[in-house]
Length: 295
Image 1: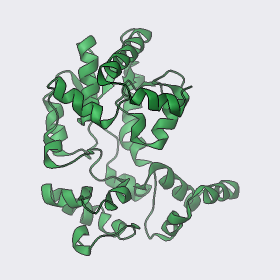
Image 2 (image 1 turned 90 degrees about the vertical axis):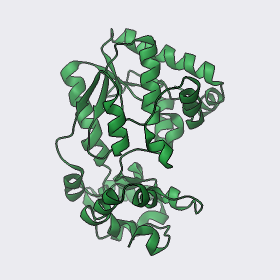
Image 3 (image 1 turned 135 degrees about the vertical axis):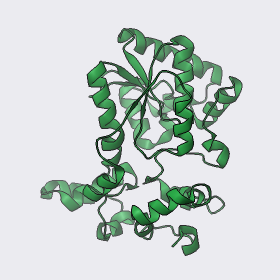
């Protein structure tokens, strides 16, 4: 078990040391599973660095791309340029997920609590979640749309787990402790190579920061998706609203949907009108002008 202090110490190491630690984790994972591993590739910069690191040691290691239909077109095109990538996809579309379960808003944790408060038959669980839910998010209990954290599980994790069951390969994923409090807690509990999780996973970049990722890309001249040259800093699912409120607070920067309106207007229109994000955004606590939301 790692402490927060140990994670902070490792995050302060120079890139050279972080590369060595990441490579050691990759080797241990590869050897433990006798080569039956794969790199989870999203087309984003973090997984791009991870794949480069893994193939610098094991050139034959395969990558797997979950084609959810939620990725930026630039990421999809970039993945097409990479050899030895297996493409998999979810069983249902994002539109059907939000219709059946609800929208991903605020964060995975808050969405889960809001969903459980609204749907559970257990008074004990409802009371527990109401205690956990911050007062600033309680107004979302009155939202006229369903809220859920199930999107990531259905669209990404389930197809990956099915691939793992079919092939017996275990994943290397590009998540970092600095991504979120939940990811740091998981790394503290299970370590970088999480052999003891229900679905084991190696996270060789756990101690890296975004700065390290960019330094690595530039130092080793690694190609990456052109989406980053269009002003995007995070390139997860295009339609996801997790963490959007944090971006809205940065008045000097466009948030993801404002930028999407400029760079991908047709996709923006689809999000707002066909997927109903226009109505969801009205409920966000930090609002800009109506023009900024395209309302």
